[in-house]
Image (cartoon, helix red, strand yellow):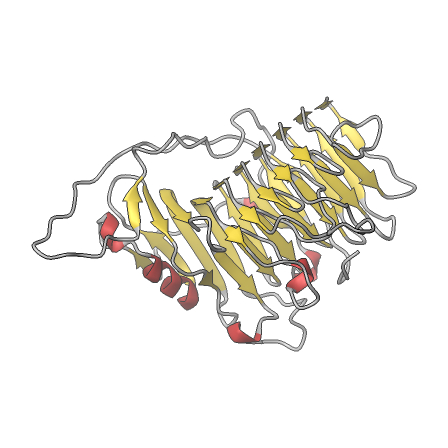
Amino acid sequence: MWPTDGPGRCLVALAGGAALAAGGTAPIAASAPVTMPQVHPSATARRLPDFGNPGGRAAVPGAAAAVGTSRPDHVVGTRTPASCTSTAVVRAVASGGVITFDCGPSPVTITMTATAKVVNTSHRIVLDGGGTVTLSGAGKRQILYMNTCDKAQQWTTSDCYDQEWPELVVQNMTFEDGNSTVSQSRGTSFGGGGGAIFDLGGQLKVVNSRFIDNRCYDVGPDLGGAAVRALAQWRNKPVYITNDTFRGGRCSNGAALSSIGVSWVVLNSIMTNNDAIGYGANPASSGTPGGGSGGAIYCDGDTYSLEIEGTVIRDNHAREGGGAIFFVSDDNTGTLTIESSTLQDNPSAGFWTRPYPGIFFQSYGHSPKVVGSTIS
């Protein structure tokens, strides 16, 4: 197993939202050759799924809810799609504070030409797309990055693995085609991963957002998180995932969410058609690169818990174990609770824990607690 750093908790639940409206913009006219903007209207693309699970009824505590953005510190764009660029997003994230978008009335996709990176001197960073902004990694790059232990983003405390700030809040956004191309090695942070969002340290919350067709490296025993990879959260506080959708992720492990020793509170979300594509499991079997577990969710570490309430996890797949969920508590203190949820058609090609199809659970002395749920 990859090294862990203290106890954590992993929680999941869900409920509904509304689909984006489609729209378009007029072509840009010019008398001389121009470089096309890094944004395009989303109207002609396929209809995006709703935010989260419309049938979810999990109560959302204040700590998991969206935050106010009526007085932003930075606004990306000046009322036109062409003004909403990758450069503007990168600059705003580096500056920190509350960030909103003004890209015109229609949904837009901003193709990122560089990863937006949080500077660790920031206190809180809020990225709010208003339900109409998509950030795309174009299949080439990670979209959003925060790492309190990355010296290039500045060290601000004596213990970068347990510090309160920055706090990263992402809400009303869509992330698609993100790609973390970092392979697992001792030189990467806990195995790499995080095609759309990578967060080591501080605090993280994602609300009313969508993650579509994100990727991370395809092999490695602990590498994971095609959509979100979270590590070393402050005082083991949970990562909140509220009213979110995860679809079409591909990664060695955890094709939606992945963590080591971290808490997740995933409220009113839906995870479909995600695939853990590594092979050789963890620890890696002889002659294999390892991976392939947790089609939707991969949780590893010591003391943590995973609670799933009001959630739909359907049609995910693992090449090894846990087509829906891979859950290993190395010190056998971890607990798993599933309440008022549906886990359906999540095949595990290698192994799973009977009688829970799609789940691999290891925490000796405990059994998953299932209340009012369907697991099939």
